[in-house]
Length: 272
Image 1 (tube, rainbow, N blue to C red):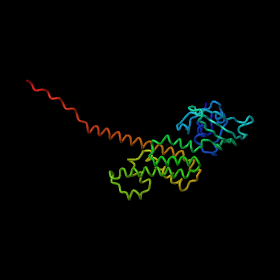
Image 2: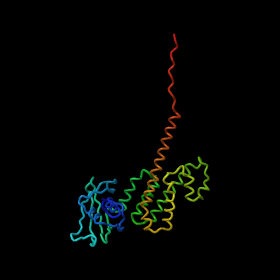
Image 3: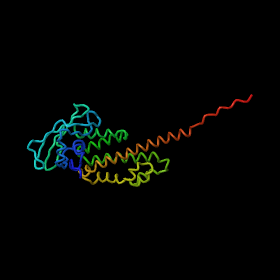
Image 4: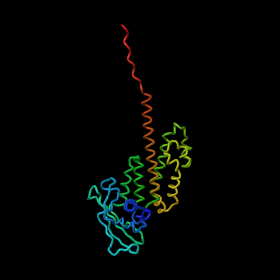
């Protein structure tokens, strides 16, 4: 027997998607199973606690549907609160609207931007100072419904990675800087493919999508694709960091091998 749909399109992750991943006023489809899950007094869910600065487990502390509520014909508004299980005073409060088999957050504290930016801290080890600031700005803008602006900042991260790899290997490979600057991004990636994360090389269309978002897509189209673009950015940065760590370790091992000197054999004493 198939498992029941617990929460619209997001299945078991519906509460986390609604409370921690969805901007205000975005309407999500809601099923009766999803409704039961949201208002279960034993609800537990994971998300970033802005006061702890870390991902925590939360438990439901407030939230009731009106007694006369009947899904899917009724509409309702109300408050829903969850508490961090590590520190009881750390609360997140949401205000919701249920209408026409959909649910929206119509308010929350801390703000969705605070929660989204806290999420980006989990990836700070992958980013240099400039990239970290722009990754935070991209997430913050997306959390406020500014999809095109979010795309701009992620595109800058891609461009900075490509440019830094060119200058890192320019002399070794004998590349011409004038030709590089005049090349299309796809050609630049092809030129640098041996020095870039494989995910980026294999999915170089990402940059075209980002550029399309900046110049042609609507805010809603950018926002819809932003989670995919953000995940792609994280994959690329993680792979890039792993590659750097491997190269550094290989260099250390090669140096140790080259510098190894066998111990001198002790000379046997002369016979009497």
